[in-house]
Image 1 (cartoon, helix red, strand yellow):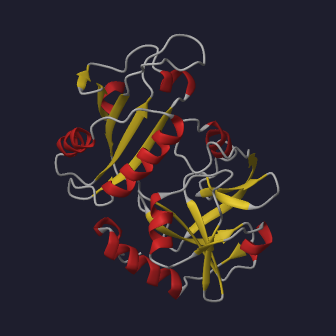
Image 2 (cartoon, helix red, strand yellow):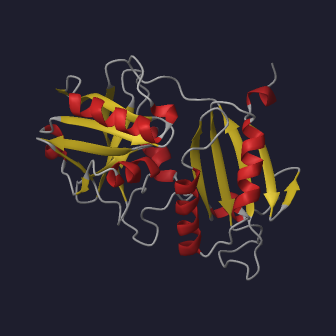
Length: 278
């Protein structure tokens, strides 16, 4: 098997025109001047397409990016998925531009679709977490957006190479919990679920928003001590759904019925997240 055989299938477009490859001088590649969405496909369909497109459109408006035709993007995505259970990644770049930070006045968006295999099942019994040393910088102009400047997450994930650790939690400069490297976090005290705000740093996850809309949680700041004293914790994202947490440092949690209840409710909203036997 060649190295090319391991690469995901990808398609590239400028506006409505399909391209053979990502064009040179693409600003997404050069500067991270781009947004992305990662969607869970179920039997070739995209149950949360509308929510992902709404977030992409919101981010594009904030960054001044032009959007491609949503009908074409969705049609190309469904064709690429070909009925599979898979992960679909959509990247929207401002387009090509010369050297320098100033965005071109008439940039034509470049967008990429790629299909990836599903992630492995989560650890039985719940995830094992650690605190990351890296602190997230606060930049309200970018907060909440799923932009392509992900070096903070790359550096945070590089902090450990321990198969006994599944994820790392990130804090802001004040020491408040924000998120995991690739997921949002929810914390239970008594009967109240909370999730940290993402108005100064972090990503406003699609799965996070769905759980808030279900009335499952309110937004509230959380310290590291709040997490240590929690009755239950879970992570969530739009690819893996709800991921119960079993351990954070020395603190351990048994499976909690409130987490199981939320997983059932989320399964009603997305067929890929119907709970199994784990």
